[in-house]
Length: 84
Image (cartoon, helix red, strand yellow):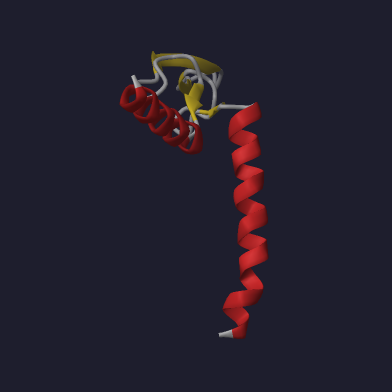
């Protein structure tokens, strides 16, 4: 039980850091295309990098909304619609 209590300040710190990250930088790199915006492949003969199809997840932007920011947007939208 004491080990669980000693972990709480660390979890609070990590949560606050992630909340600050979501507030100041709401978009992160796409996990599927790694921020390129499309699939990158190498050609068969020359080995050069080529751009393929646009990434379906980020729609070619290379950026995606962070999970924490999406949750914040959903909660704030719910609060705004409830008070209207």
